[in-house]
Amino acid sequence: METTGTGRKPRHVFIIGSKSIGQYGGYETFVQRLVAEHEHNAAVQYHVACKANGEGCMDESKLDGVEVTKRSADGAVEEFTYKGAHVFKIACPNIGPAVALYYDRAALRYSIRYCQKHNIQRPVFYVLTCRIGPVMGGFARIIHRMGGEYHVNPDGHEWMRAKWSAPVRKYWKMSERLMIRSADLVICDSLGIQEYVQKEYARYAPRTTYIAYGADLQPSSMPDDDPTFAEWTGAHGVRPGEYYLVVGRFVPENNYETMIREFMQSSSDKDFVLVTNANEAFLAQLEERLHFAADPRIKFVGTVYDRELLKKIRERAYAYLHGHEVGGTNPSLLEALGSTELNLLLDVNFNREVARDAALYWSKEQGSLAGLLHEVDSMDADARSQLGKAAKQRIASAYSWEFIGNEYLRVWG
Image (cartoon, rainbow, N blue to C red; front, side):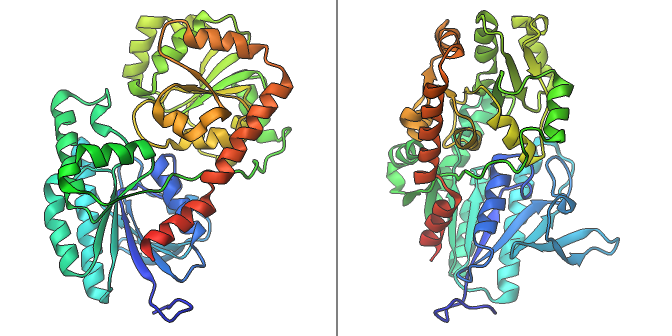
């Protein structure tokens, strides 16, 4: 077994909860960047669970440098290595939303058996988000008997999300409580979430630490006149440098309704480009309330999986709009701060914690965002440039992947 420069064996870290590696989604990007950051670091060995089938499942053909290590009898890939990480795929039954609970439990069972089979000492089981609280206590006891540790990242306030019914929200809150109660360490990607955990669950005296999500300051590899970018702008009738942009999940708590309504009330001659996986039911609700289809500036353009193209889209936006109000450090906000000069954020503590004075802020109060759009539409280039420099400096000082990777090594050392 590989050892570190000090002769110690590497710390084995099993990451549970990401659907895949590097495909669309915050956790998926996080896992890709974390394993890449430590590809040549002998102090840590990652083992990553991915879904073998269903929504968001792992498609290893989209990754470079994959080495298949195990196939099923019918030739399907079951395990592979990527950037030094051991990746294993979990087949899931078609049971609707409950599949997420099945997936986390199955991935934990696999990981525990793997440790027992390979006699792995001091493993860390890092569970992303709080789905399986009712069974996590039992898993934690097994992990402790093995000499391992159970760490959890509670993400944001999942139990507050508008998409959930009242019974599901109640389950999420209960599950969060049980997972934090059993955890050896709660890793919070926001200072606000850390404060919430310490206050809400003080009776459990949770051990917490703050490690943010990371972001990339490397410019897109695409030049401004790249044919792929030109094809994208042409297909959607978008003018480079003349559009407001939002990238994120199409859910009510990201305040799409407020952003669209306020944009429609503005007199801006720019477009509002929404890069999102718009679901038809929510889209129909918004159309019924706002009638945005009659406004040619509002453009739903679907998702963009080409990361270099998405980065170029961010770079050439006039400004980025961010309406997230539930959760911790949001990946799309960090990526916008690293790429887009002008960022207009909903004024909540999570967003101010991240951007500080490197962005401008709006509220959900009627006329707030429309008024801000009127102001920034005529903002001079120097003012926009200064905000852009401040945003990139903020990312460089606190959110670079190198910094984030070192913070995780500190925890797992």
